Image 1 (cartoon, one colour):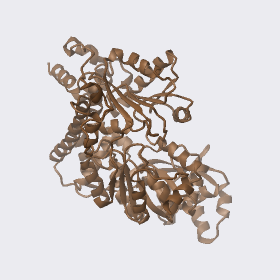
Image 2 (cartoon, one colour; image 1 turned 60 degrees about the vertical axis):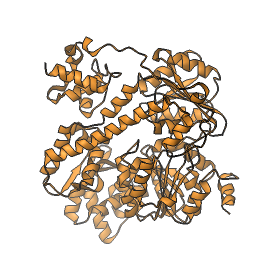
Image 3 (cartoon, helix red, strand yellow; image 1 turned 180 degrees about the horizontal axis):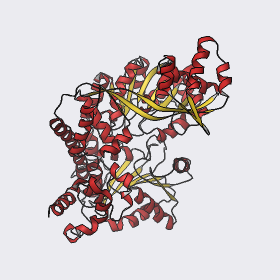
Image 4 (cartoon, helix red, strand yellow; image 1 turned 120 degrees about the horizontal axis):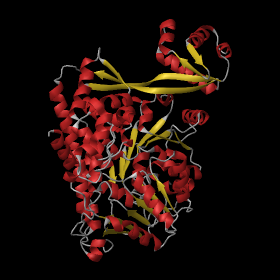
Length: 640
């Protein structure tokens, strides 16, 4: 029966390992988790049940823009599926929402942030959702390699909107992260299905290569078969541009791909790669998530990956057709400090945490409303660490997230105001008249004064928002919502700022140490004195009986040794005043030794944005130096 449905909807004759077991559990209306390696068919575990469950399947992904390939696959198989994102035109958004509400849509993909969207929440309450799918579910664990604080709210959203079951999907979960996932979603361990991480068609090659030789090594590797589909992973956007340009000069049709490019350009490159029109993409880690291209023959890490988890995900994109594929790392220790610097950049200063606590303690009343981006800039804490801090404070029971709303509603009239009012009778006509009376039009856009409407008509906010949504659905107005405000309950203001700031900062330091350990664990894997395939599987809890796989560089030629291959000029040879002078002039009273260290190491902070400090001379001059050494050098010079 199930195989007939598989053939009917997707044209497949058989299931891959683990798929049928997970699908049966979901169809039995139980929550489950599928821990399958990249390319092992996790997506089908929700795609087939979505066609068989009575309601809609809601899929949450951390990078919605990169799920385009999954969506194309579903539509090609005539599966009613869509995604909601900020690129949609108003008419497309309204059409998708209407299909989700009337039950004709079977799969809807959203980002986790969409749950905070007041307009979406209004519509979600009217949708029949059978299954909540959490893609990249490891993001819910603060001890995972890609923690996203918003994921911690997913169990609450599930309860709030009455979604009875969940399916957690990930390719990279250690035992600790798996325990965390199960605890947060109240998932039985017996409903967790792990298929194993070992793949016998991937050749894992660690090639010790000096920085000066990397480009030539890469070129010679690609020239072995210039038409073979290849992803080259790099750490920095500027490296992606440089390497793609180098390959192009030597006759290789390569394109860069990174988050700094326009969405349309990224989509064009992805489409060309998927359709075989482009053989080589030089990309940062953003490329590849959600891509299901079967015949990728090579994944080459020009720079070291960020962690073993990232490495496992990225090499998993090769050889999904089961044919032999090369996964090569051009390895040395020159970029280890670049990876470490990303991590140090996410640790806020203790003084910034203290300022956050003072804001909470001095707040009048027990409702705290924030605009995250503005608060991030004011406190000089990057946005993701700020959200992490708010999660830590919620765990400490200092605050509790309540809801989010849009501060500003504006619209374009597509029908005259009097015409809109004329569509209603009685009390509803009076209410619509009151809404229109408290709107102010400037040229094209009309702003809505929600508070004034509430005060004059004695109605609640939700009724006004519902009316605006209704007008938009009818095509009478084109509605826009802006300026998200997050609302928190303040549970206590009776805390010692210094003590709590010390403990919060200690949590960030612990997380920082863990991330640094991940980098060194990855280097340790590449320098392993035993089979790489066996070591990689063991990291994720899979025990391989064989001692040697026969298809890794250790089994073929022995242990690799990674070295520093670029000699760095001693920090003491630099003139402190010369390298920091422009920064001092620009930063003024916001100076701190840590801020200067971040500037010299090329680490962005919110305080730099408004002052345009990234454009100053010497920004990132020490990006290849150890962060802690630069910090010590700065402090030594500050104190002399």
